[in-house]
Each structure stands twice: as C-alpha cells, then as structure tokens.
Amino acid sequence: MHEFPVMPLGPFHIDISTLVAIVVSVIVTFLIAKLAVRNLSVDNPSKFQNFLEWVVDFVHSFISSTMPVNRVKPFLSLGMTLIMFIFVSNLLGLPFGIVTETHHVNESIGVTQDLLDSKGGEVELAWWKSPTADISVTAGLALIVFVIVHFLGLKQNRKHYLKHYFHPFPIFFPVNIIETISKPVTLALRLFANIFAGEVLIATILMMGWYGTPFLAAWQAFSLFVGGIQAFLFTILTMVYISQAAIHEEEH
Amino acid sequence: MSWHWESTVIAMIAFGILYWLLSKYAFGPLFEVMEKRRQLVLEQMNTAENSRKAAEQQMEEQKAALQQARKEAYEIIEQSRTTSSKQAEEIVQSAKSEASRLKDDALKDIESEKNKAIAALRTEVGGISVKIASKIIEKQVDEKSQEQLVGQYLKEVGNK
Image (cartoon, rainbow over all chains, first blue to last red; front, side, top):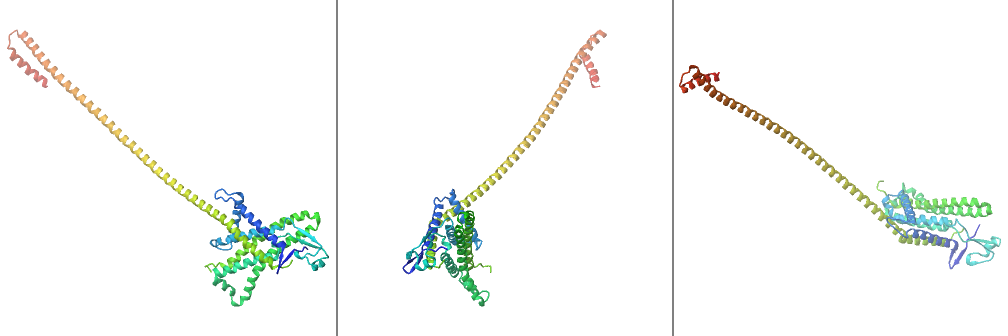
C-alpha cells in the first residue's frame, strides 16, 4: 500500500496529503456555495441557486425529522456545512490519484531510512486522497460533533441531560458512558472506513491495468453513491445526537 | 495508515473556518432570500385571498342589485297592468254612459217630436174639423166654442 508524505515541522508531524485534501475540500465547498449564491434573487432564482435551495430544503426536512420543526433553524447551517463538506471530501479522492516513487531518504516528507529498508528501497507516496479517508480527519469531525452535542446538552437541557446518564437506574451509569463515547467513535470510524475502503479498492483495481477499466468505472459510480450516503448519515446522526442531548420534549 | 493528531486539529480548524465562511457569505444571504420569498408568497396568497373575497362580495352585491331591478320591473309591469285595466274599465264605463246619454237624448227627442207632432196634428185636426163642421152644418158656428169642444174630444182621445 501507499505511504503518505508526513512533514516533520518542529514538534508536529504534518500529513501533507491530508492537509492538501482538507484545504482543497474547504475551497471547493466554499466555491460551490459561493457560486450558487452569486446572483441571489427572490423571484427569479438561477438554476444553481435553485439547486442550493433544494439542498437547504432537503437538509431542513431531514433535520426536522429528528427534532421539533421550530428548533431546526440554528442547526440548518451546521447541517448544510457538514453534508456539503463531507460529500465533497468523499468525492475528492475518486477521480484521480497522485503517486510518486522515491528511492532516496527525504526526511522532510517522512521518507526515513527505516521506511526505505522495510519497503525494499522503493517507497510509493500518495499525495492525493479524500480527507475523509483519513481517520484523523473523521475523528476531528466527530470530535466537533461530540463537543457541540454535549455543550448544547449542558447549556439548553442541563437537568435532563445530566439525568439521562443515570437512566433508568444509577447502576446503568457505565453503560451510558460507553454509549456516549461510542457515538462519536462510530461516527468517525463509519465514515473513515467506507471512504478508505473505497479508495483502497480503487488502488487495487488500478493494479489490474486496463482490464480493470469497467470495474473502476462501476466502483467509482458506487463510491459516488457511498459518498453521498455517508455524508447524509453523518449529518443526520449528528442531528439525532443533538436532538437526544439538547432537546427535551415536554410530553414525557 | 497512521494516526496524526495534527490532522485532527487541522480538520477541526478547517471545518470551523468553513462553517464560519459559509454561514457568513453563502447560507446567511441564501436563507435571507428564502425567507423573503416565503414572505412574498405568503403576501401574494393573502392578496389573492382578499381579492377573491372582494370579488365574491361584488358578485353578491350585483346579484342583489339584479334582484332589485327584477323586482322593480315586475312592479312596473304589475302597475301598468292595473292602470291599463282601470283605464279600459273607465273607457268602457264612459262609452256606456255616453251611449245611454245618447239613447236618452234620442228618446227625449222622440218624445218632444211626438208631442210637437201631436200638438200640430191637434191644431190641424181642430182646424179641419171646424171646416168640416162648418161645411156640414153650413152654419156659422162660433169658431171659438167649436174649437174648445173639439180640443176636449181630442184630449180624451190622446189620453186613451
């Protein structure tokens, strides 16, 4: 499998491919949104604006399926950002890859003598991938969600939020802690595993040479689908968690 | 695949920046426009509802006016009908009275003519009978007493 270029920078080790991927994803996402709202119009929206409004309606409808509809508004922006960023990120690694081979030690991109030795003198470096195919990135997203969920739970719904750790009986406290921890972990792992598996399979199919072209096309199409599904899942689960922690309905 | 916590931090920062940028430059204005459109649609629906109500009301008014006009027309017809029948009656009445007046006049005329004729005849007959008597008796009778006598007889005849 490919290695990734890791640049040591003082005490930090920056994964250059991830950094590039994140920056590109952010820029692409922002450009898409910015282009869509370029000529905003109330009564004569452009096609692009219609598309983004359709996305807004879609996100709004699935958020309101997780919480009372009058509570949706503050989370609409978050949901839109999440779904667009993750979707763009998921697709980023699909169309092409950039792989270089090096035979020399280059500490500034993380090629050490040990690595060269273990790979038999030739290291393949992948410079281009989906940011979400990196567990560190999905963990970052899940961590953001984790912080938001528990911050909102403490701020807006403190009594019920704290009570739910001891629900239905105080003895269940460890179980509830495990549940709380497992939520962001599964969130991060699910997204990472789906996208990473997709890219691994693409790399594997590429090894078949040109025989693999139909498989590659089919798999890329499927990855497109998976990317959409995972972006949707991540967002809706985020909203479900927020709803569970922060919104207490008066009925029960 | 190895874990780099630096990537996690970068991802979180990048996501934060993206969220801020999108909220400020893309979604904020977009939501505003969508809200404006919602208001616009609501307003137009209200306007449509109002104009529908106004139209309905006007329709109602026109119906009422039509009803009124119809009623008035019916009254006019009814009135003219009674007027005409009254006039016809009057005409017939006046014609009848005229006819009876004419008849009475005629009867009166006849009566007076008859009386005149009777008077003339009486005079004539008196004269003639005097002449006849004077011829018959060939005697100069007092014409005056004769006439008185004849008048008496004729009166008796006329009364019978």
